Length: 398
Image 1 (cartoon, one colour):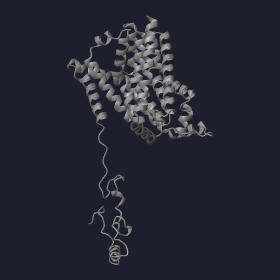
Image 2 (spheres, helix red, strand yellow):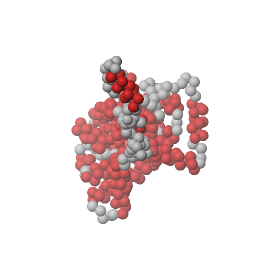
Image 3 (spheres, one colour):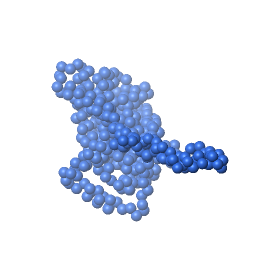
Image 4 (spheres, helix red, strand yellow):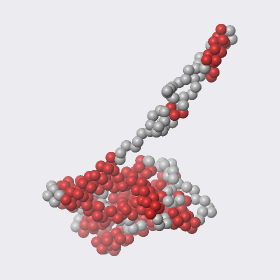
C-alpha cells in the first residue's frame, strides 16, 4: 500500500514535451520549478503543515490534552489535609494546622462554590444580548453603576463571585464592568455585611461599603478608558445591542431552557462543572497555599506587625495577597485588626486588597481574558486607591 503523503512521479507526457523543445532549440529548457506542466502533483491537504492532523488521518493522529496537574494536584493535597484533620489526631502540629485550615475553608466556602457553579451554568445559557441589556453599555457610567450594584447585592462568597464574574466577561461584559463587579462583591453580600456590622458596628460597616463602591467605580472607569484608548485589549465577546431588542422574550426563552427534568439538570451540571473548572483549580490551589502559610507562620507574629502604621498597611496588603481567605473568614480578621490592633484602615485594606491582589483572581483573569495587560489592570489601578484610603482612615481615626 503506497503512502498517501509521498510525492507522485512527474507526468511522462510533460517530460517528453520539455525534451522536444530542448532538441528543437525553440526555448531554453525550463526547470521543473518554473514550468507548471512538469510540477509534481500537490500533496494531500492532510499533510500540509498549517492543517492540524486529525485523529485517524494518514499523517498521524491528534494529541490528547495533558492532564491538569494543578487541578488534580491541588485537589489531592486538599483532600489529604481534610482527611488528616479528621482521621489523624496524633499528626504533627504543622500537619494538624494545615488539615484544620483545609477543613475550615471547605466548611465555609462549599456553598459559595456550589452556587457559583450553578450560576456559571445558568449564565452560560444567557444570550450575550441579554447580558448587555441588563448590565448596560460597556464603558458607560450607567453600565459601571449596574455592575457595582449587582456586585453589592449578589449574596455569594468571593469564590462564587469569581466564577460569576468570569462568566459575565465571557458573555460580553466590558473589562471595566468585570473589575467593578469583582471589587464591589467579595464582602458586600447581605449576610456578610450583617456579620461585619455586628463585629465593627454599623457606622464603620456603611463607611466601608461606600468606600468600596467608590474604588470599584474608579477602577472600572479607568479600565474602560484605557480600553477605549487602545492601551488594553477590548473584550472580544462584546456584542452590539440591537435597538429593537426586548428583554422579555429572552427571559422567557431562558426559563424554558431551565424547565425541571433530570436530563436538563444533568446537562446544567455538566455545563457548570465544565465552565467553572478553570476557576475551581485556582480556588483549590489557593486553599492549599493558605493552609501552608497558616501552618508555617505563627499567629502571634501575624497580629504583632499589623498596627496602624505605614509598614502595617503594607504588611496587611502582603498578608491579604498571600492568604486565600473566604469572605466568612475575612470579616472576623478585619474586625480583629480594628479592635486588637486599633487599625481600622488596615481592616479596610484587608477587606479590599484581597479582591484587588488575590492570586486566584489574577490567575483566573489571565486565563479568561488572555491578556496580562487586562489582568494587571485590577491590582495596578485599585491597590493605590485602597492604600490611600486605608492611610486616611488610620490618620483621621487616631
